Image 1 (tube, helix red, strand yellow):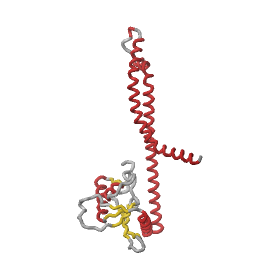
Image 2 (cartoon, rainbow, N blue to C red; image 1 turned 90 degrees about the horizontal axis):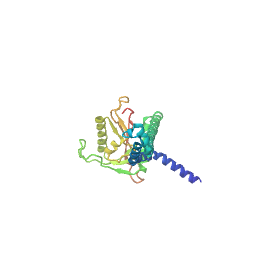
Image 3 (cartoon, helix red, strand yellow; image 1 turned 90 degrees about the vertical axis):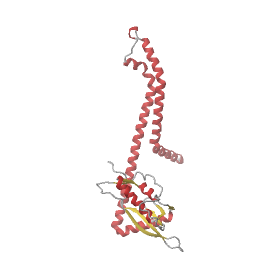
Image 4 (cartoon, rainbow, N blue to C red; image 1 turned 120 degrees about the vertical axis):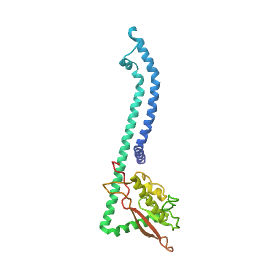
Length: 274
Protein backbone atom coordinates (compact mmCIF):
# COMPACT_ATOMS: atom_id res chain seq x y z
CA UNK A 1 0.00 0.00 0.00
CA UNK A 2 2.81 2.40 0.87
CA UNK A 3 4.61 2.06 -2.50
CA UNK A 4 1.31 2.81 -4.24
CA UNK A 5 0.77 5.89 -2.08
CA UNK A 6 4.30 7.06 -2.84
CA UNK A 7 3.72 6.57 -6.55
CA UNK A 8 0.47 8.54 -6.40
CA UNK A 9 2.16 11.32 -4.44
CA UNK A 10 5.04 11.48 -6.94
CA UNK A 11 2.59 11.54 -9.85
CA UNK A 12 0.72 14.38 -8.16
CA UNK A 13 3.94 16.39 -7.78
CA UNK A 14 4.86 15.81 -11.42
CA UNK A 15 1.38 16.81 -12.55
CA UNK A 16 1.47 19.97 -10.45
CA UNK A 17 4.87 20.92 -11.86
CA UNK A 18 3.69 20.36 -15.44
CA UNK A 19 0.33 22.09 -14.94
CA UNK A 20 1.25 25.35 -16.77
CA UNK A 21 2.50 23.39 -19.79
CA UNK A 22 -0.57 21.16 -19.83
CA UNK A 23 -2.93 24.14 -19.58
CA UNK A 24 -1.04 25.95 -22.36
CA UNK A 25 -1.39 22.92 -24.64
CA UNK A 26 -5.09 22.63 -23.79
CA UNK A 27 -5.53 26.35 -24.44
CA UNK A 28 -3.91 26.02 -27.86
CA UNK A 29 -6.06 23.02 -28.70
CA UNK A 30 -9.10 24.90 -27.41
CA UNK A 31 -8.57 27.78 -29.84
CA UNK A 32 -8.58 25.35 -32.77
CA UNK A 33 -11.56 23.41 -31.39
CA UNK A 34 -13.58 26.59 -30.84
CA UNK A 35 -12.97 27.70 -34.42
CA UNK A 36 -13.97 24.29 -35.84
CA UNK A 37 -17.14 24.11 -33.75
CA UNK A 38 -18.12 27.65 -34.74
CA UNK A 39 -17.64 26.88 -38.43
CA UNK A 40 -19.66 23.67 -38.16
CA UNK A 41 -22.47 25.45 -36.30
CA UNK A 42 -22.85 28.26 -38.85
CA UNK A 43 -24.79 26.34 -41.59
CA UNK A 44 -27.24 25.04 -39.01
CA UNK A 45 -27.62 28.52 -37.54
CA UNK A 46 -28.33 30.00 -40.98
CA UNK A 47 -30.91 27.30 -41.58
CA UNK A 48 -32.66 28.17 -38.32
CA UNK A 49 -32.64 31.86 -39.21
CA UNK A 50 -34.33 31.07 -42.53
CA UNK A 51 -36.90 28.93 -40.71
CA UNK A 52 -37.58 31.81 -38.33
CA UNK A 53 -38.09 34.15 -41.26
CA UNK A 54 -40.50 31.69 -42.88
CA UNK A 55 -42.51 31.45 -39.66
CA UNK A 56 -43.10 35.21 -39.52
CA UNK A 57 -46.18 36.91 -40.97
CA UNK A 58 -45.85 37.71 -44.70
CA UNK A 59 -45.62 41.46 -44.08
CA UNK A 60 -42.52 41.04 -41.79
CA UNK A 61 -40.75 38.17 -43.56
CA UNK A 62 -37.93 40.24 -45.05
CA UNK A 63 -36.03 41.04 -41.87
CA UNK A 64 -35.51 39.67 -38.36
CA UNK A 65 -34.67 41.87 -35.42
CA UNK A 66 -31.37 41.33 -33.65
CA UNK A 67 -33.04 39.59 -30.70
CA UNK A 68 -35.08 37.38 -33.04
CA UNK A 69 -31.89 36.35 -34.87
CA UNK A 70 -30.14 35.50 -31.59
CA UNK A 71 -33.17 33.57 -30.32
CA UNK A 72 -33.27 31.55 -33.53
CA UNK A 73 -29.66 30.38 -33.61
CA UNK A 74 -28.00 30.76 -30.19
CA UNK A 75 -28.40 27.09 -29.31
CA UNK A 76 -26.28 26.12 -32.32
CA UNK A 77 -23.27 27.89 -30.80
CA UNK A 78 -23.47 26.34 -27.32
CA UNK A 79 -20.61 23.83 -28.00
CA UNK A 80 -18.38 26.54 -29.50
CA UNK A 81 -19.15 28.92 -26.61
CA UNK A 82 -18.39 26.22 -24.03
CA UNK A 83 -15.11 25.41 -25.77
CA UNK A 84 -14.23 29.11 -25.89
CA UNK A 85 -14.89 29.58 -22.17
CA UNK A 86 -12.82 26.49 -21.33
CA UNK A 87 -10.01 27.79 -23.57
CA UNK A 88 -9.98 31.16 -21.81
CA UNK A 89 -9.89 29.35 -18.46
CA UNK A 90 -6.90 27.26 -19.55
CA UNK A 91 -4.98 30.29 -20.80
CA UNK A 92 -5.68 32.33 -17.65
CA UNK A 93 -4.88 29.34 -15.43
CA UNK A 94 -1.56 28.72 -17.18
CA UNK A 95 -0.64 32.39 -16.83
CA UNK A 96 -1.48 32.42 -13.10
CA UNK A 97 0.48 29.22 -12.44
CA UNK A 98 3.47 30.53 -14.41
CA UNK A 99 3.48 33.70 -12.32
CA UNK A 100 3.25 31.66 -9.12
CA UNK A 101 6.11 29.38 -10.13
CA UNK A 102 8.22 32.37 -11.15
CA UNK A 103 7.47 34.09 -7.84
CA UNK A 104 8.37 30.91 -5.94
CA UNK A 105 11.61 30.55 -7.91
CA UNK A 106 12.50 34.19 -7.30
CA UNK A 107 11.79 33.91 -3.57
CA UNK A 108 13.84 30.72 -3.29
CA UNK A 109 16.77 32.28 -5.16
CA UNK A 110 16.68 35.46 -3.06
CA UNK A 111 16.57 33.40 0.14
CA UNK A 112 19.46 31.18 -1.01
CA UNK A 113 21.55 34.17 -2.08
CA UNK A 114 20.84 35.99 1.20
CA UNK A 115 21.75 32.88 3.22
CA UNK A 116 25.01 32.54 1.28
CA UNK A 117 25.88 36.20 1.83
CA UNK A 118 25.05 35.96 5.55
CA UNK A 119 27.23 32.85 5.84
CA UNK A 120 30.17 34.53 4.14
CA UNK A 121 29.75 37.59 6.36
CA UNK A 122 29.66 35.43 9.51
CA UNK A 123 32.79 33.55 8.45
CA UNK A 124 34.62 36.84 7.91
CA UNK A 125 33.42 38.20 11.27
CA UNK A 126 34.53 35.10 13.17
CA UNK A 127 37.69 34.09 11.31
CA UNK A 128 38.59 37.27 9.42
CA UNK A 129 39.42 37.70 5.74
CA UNK A 130 42.18 35.12 5.96
CA UNK A 131 39.82 32.54 7.46
CA UNK A 132 37.24 33.17 4.73
CA UNK A 133 39.94 32.71 2.12
CA UNK A 134 41.04 29.41 3.69
CA UNK A 135 37.44 28.12 3.71
CA UNK A 136 37.13 28.85 -0.02
CA UNK A 137 40.48 27.24 -0.76
CA UNK A 138 39.57 24.13 1.22
CA UNK A 139 36.24 23.90 -0.61
CA UNK A 140 38.01 24.22 -3.95
CA UNK A 141 40.47 21.45 -3.01
CA UNK A 142 37.62 19.08 -2.11
CA UNK A 143 35.50 19.86 -5.18
CA UNK A 144 38.34 19.84 -7.71
CA UNK A 145 39.40 16.40 -6.52
CA UNK A 146 35.88 15.10 -7.25
CA UNK A 147 35.09 16.90 -10.51
CA UNK A 148 36.16 16.27 -14.08
CA UNK A 149 38.39 18.90 -15.67
CA UNK A 150 36.99 20.74 -18.71
CA UNK A 151 39.52 21.76 -21.35
CA UNK A 152 38.61 24.95 -23.16
CA UNK A 153 40.21 27.29 -25.66
CA UNK A 154 38.05 30.25 -24.70
CA UNK A 155 35.64 32.06 -26.98
CA UNK A 156 38.06 34.24 -28.91
CA UNK A 157 40.24 33.37 -31.87
CA UNK A 158 41.62 36.87 -32.35
CA UNK A 159 40.87 39.86 -30.16
CA UNK A 160 42.41 43.12 -29.06
CA UNK A 161 43.82 41.27 -26.04
CA UNK A 162 45.10 38.25 -27.95
CA UNK A 163 48.80 38.78 -28.69
CA UNK A 164 49.41 35.12 -29.61
CA UNK A 165 51.93 34.78 -26.79
CA UNK A 166 52.47 31.15 -25.77
CA UNK A 167 51.05 30.59 -22.32
CA UNK A 168 50.99 27.68 -19.95
CA UNK A 169 47.62 26.17 -19.15
CA UNK A 170 46.47 26.28 -15.54
CA UNK A 171 43.75 24.55 -13.58
CA UNK A 172 40.87 26.90 -12.71
CA UNK A 173 37.93 26.36 -10.38
CA UNK A 174 34.71 28.39 -10.70
CA UNK A 175 33.00 28.40 -7.32
CA UNK A 176 29.58 29.46 -8.56
CA UNK A 177 29.03 26.68 -11.11
CA UNK A 178 31.23 24.20 -9.20
CA UNK A 179 33.34 23.44 -12.28
CA UNK A 180 37.03 23.03 -12.89
CA UNK A 181 38.54 23.76 -16.27
CA UNK A 182 41.93 24.11 -17.90
CA UNK A 183 42.79 27.39 -19.61
CA UNK A 184 45.40 30.11 -19.66
CA UNK A 185 45.46 33.16 -17.43
CA UNK A 186 45.33 35.35 -20.52
CA UNK A 187 42.15 33.73 -21.84
CA UNK A 188 40.44 34.03 -18.45
CA UNK A 189 41.37 37.70 -18.24
CA UNK A 190 40.07 38.15 -21.80
CA UNK A 191 36.74 36.64 -20.78
CA UNK A 192 36.48 38.92 -17.73
CA UNK A 193 37.43 41.96 -19.82
CA UNK A 194 34.86 41.24 -22.54
CA UNK A 195 32.16 40.61 -19.93
CA UNK A 196 32.76 44.04 -18.41
CA UNK A 197 33.00 45.61 -21.85
CA UNK A 198 29.53 44.24 -22.66
CA UNK A 199 28.33 45.40 -19.24
CA UNK A 200 29.55 48.94 -19.96
CA UNK A 201 27.93 48.97 -23.42
CA UNK A 202 24.60 47.28 -22.60
CA UNK A 203 24.09 47.97 -18.92
CA UNK A 204 23.60 44.27 -18.15
CA UNK A 205 25.24 40.87 -18.61
CA UNK A 206 24.13 37.36 -17.73
CA UNK A 207 26.10 34.67 -15.95
CA UNK A 208 26.04 32.56 -19.11
CA UNK A 209 27.68 35.44 -21.00
CA UNK A 210 30.74 34.92 -18.82
CA UNK A 211 30.71 31.17 -19.38
CA UNK A 212 30.40 31.75 -23.13
CA UNK A 213 33.53 33.93 -23.05
CA UNK A 214 35.34 31.30 -20.99
CA UNK A 215 34.37 28.66 -23.54
CA UNK A 216 32.25 26.73 -21.02
CA UNK A 217 28.78 25.28 -21.45
CA UNK A 218 25.91 27.47 -20.18
CA UNK A 219 24.18 26.46 -16.96
CA UNK A 220 20.48 26.20 -16.19
CA UNK A 221 18.92 29.59 -15.36
CA UNK A 222 22.26 31.24 -16.20
CA UNK A 223 20.51 33.49 -18.73
CA UNK A 224 18.10 34.76 -16.06
CA UNK A 225 20.67 35.88 -13.48
CA UNK A 226 23.59 38.23 -13.87
CA UNK A 227 24.55 41.83 -13.18
CA UNK A 228 22.56 44.99 -13.90
CA UNK A 229 23.72 48.61 -13.79
CA UNK A 230 22.04 49.91 -10.65
CA UNK A 231 22.44 53.42 -9.26
CA UNK A 232 21.19 52.27 -5.86
CA UNK A 233 23.89 49.63 -5.42
CA UNK A 234 26.40 51.57 -7.53
CA UNK A 235 27.17 48.51 -9.64
CA UNK A 236 28.91 49.47 -12.86
CA UNK A 237 31.60 46.80 -13.05
CA UNK A 238 31.81 43.08 -12.31
CA UNK A 239 34.69 42.53 -9.90
CA UNK A 240 36.39 39.14 -9.74
CA UNK A 241 38.30 37.75 -6.78
CA UNK A 242 41.18 35.42 -7.62
CA UNK A 243 43.09 33.21 -5.23
CA UNK A 244 45.44 30.25 -5.45
CA UNK A 245 45.42 26.89 -3.71
CA UNK A 246 47.22 23.61 -4.28
CA UNK A 247 45.73 20.17 -4.93
CA UNK A 248 47.43 16.92 -3.94
CA UNK A 249 47.70 14.74 -7.05
CA UNK A 250 49.05 11.65 -5.36
CA UNK A 251 51.87 10.85 -2.91
CA UNK A 252 54.56 10.70 -5.59
CA UNK A 253 53.43 13.68 -7.65
CA UNK A 254 53.93 17.39 -7.02
CA UNK A 255 51.00 19.49 -5.90
CA UNK A 256 48.89 21.01 -8.67
CA UNK A 257 48.26 24.74 -8.58
CA UNK A 258 44.55 25.65 -8.78
CA UNK A 259 43.35 29.19 -9.46
CA UNK A 260 39.99 30.01 -7.86
CA UNK A 261 37.55 32.39 -9.56
CA UNK A 262 34.94 34.09 -7.40
CA UNK A 263 32.60 37.07 -7.84
CA UNK A 264 32.93 39.99 -5.46
CA UNK A 265 29.18 40.42 -5.90
CA UNK A 266 27.33 37.22 -6.91
CA UNK A 267 24.94 37.31 -9.89
CA UNK A 268 21.32 38.02 -9.08
CA UNK A 269 17.89 38.36 -10.67
CA UNK A 270 17.14 41.64 -12.49
CA UNK A 271 15.55 44.52 -10.55
CA UNK A 272 11.76 44.73 -10.79
CA UNK A 273 11.89 47.94 -12.81
CA UNK A 274 14.45 46.58 -15.30
